[in-house]
Image (cartoon, rainbow, N blue to C red; front, side, top):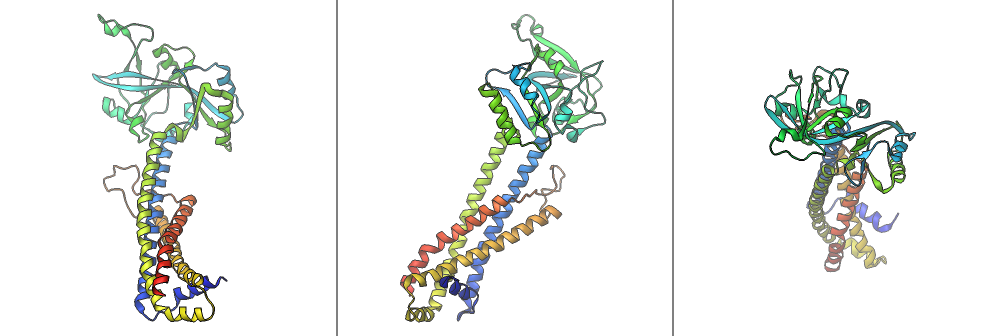
Amino acid sequence: MNLSLYIARRYLFSKKSVGAINVISGISVCGVALATLALVCTLSVFNGFRELVAGFFTAFDPELKITTVQGKTFDVHDSLIVSVRQMPEIEVSTACLEENAMVQYRGRQAVVTLKGVEDNFEQLTGIDSILYGQGRFLLHDNVADYAVPGLQLVSALGTGIQPVDPIEVFAPKRHARVNLANPAASFERDYLYSPGVAFAVNQEKYDASYVLTSLEFARRLFDYDTEATSLELKLKPGSDLKRVKRNIVSLLGEEYVVHDRYEQQADVFRIMEIEKLISYLFLSFILLVACFNIVGSLSMLIIDKKADVETLRNLGADERLISRIFLFEGWLISLMGALAGIVLGLLLCFLQQRYGLIALGSGGGFVVDAYPVSVQVSDLLLIFFTVSLAGFLSVGYPVRMLSKRLL
């Protein structure tokens, strides 16, 4: 064993002539442990919220989404698009057409994003898990076309989950000029009925403005033939998402863009990552301040061990070996604090997952009752590295100066 490390370990656990040194060392360990615990819990909470939000999007957004680079729509009969749909890794593919429209119900109006999808949209996403009402997911039948709106839009229009009257839908005519004498003539008008359900993604972007309907109805309303604004894909179980995405990008070239779920919601997840980074930086600064407490305990230890240092010198120890003893002492204190903080943080995260110790509120207005947490190994490694680096930076230079002055 390294001699400096061996002596530092003995000093760490041995009884000192002044009892306050042990107390100060214990306080230093507790300070580092609490800062480390805060890092573990805070980063885990951000991970929990990220997975919670991703879970909501999973029920609505596809695994992969293909859009065109130029223009708004593309022909689904394009040979490249057909080739993608025939790839062996693709389990479900759905052509979608999204356009803005105005809906009206008994005098109430709202501008919405009307999303026309194919009949297999139910197999593409987990839409059934976010449906509310007594009906079922239905886009059209032999009698009528149907609309599945977001729950906030239902409230804004006052339709209820299963309205009695149909919803009027208006869209500007594509190739017609606005008739100022009769503006209504410049709009296509059609009706959508309710299948008795509405969806709730718990994201205002969707719940307050999206209406799902059949692709045929959307094409008829917006005057399209075989065009679509996107092609949404679901992969077969066991498929490598990143590899399949690379293959699709290589196949389509520069004419199309392929996005996975996180890229489809890049703004939301980018904000969450920035918040997580800022929290990490602030807590790391607090950790660095806590590590400077170690310097106080080391300075007292150096004074307490003057006689031992003199003995080591008589035995042939040089200044470098003696400095390393107290450097290792400081690093061992920070290491103990790091390990204790990580263990306690993991314990608190487990208790929060199991029992929901810290609730979000008692009003029942939240999606989950307690703060969600998700521990990631990468975060634990980052925290351990951060504590080690903070201990090294806070102890290295001060110990060398104290050794020269006090010894």
